[in-house]
Length: 98
View (tube, rainbow, N blue to C red):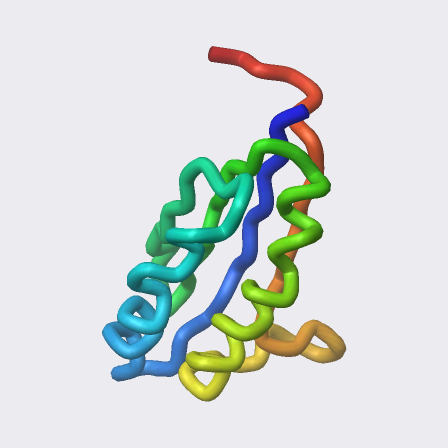
């Protein structure tokens, strides 16, 4: 069953290009990754949204996702008490609307 993950970030002012460059090519060879996009949400906010073949593929890619995060972690601001620098969510598709 298709799965998605989304991760929200807040990038430090002036570090936006470094953040984006750290993602170029990331995931190109990760098994099960169908698509991934980064959207800008304003005020330094960004969100990665990725589509996967299934939850197993997504889970198997977590070490690579963490390794990618380690390449740009210093470009990120804390999201709030107890949140760290990322706000991830993932799960299987339960309803396709279009």
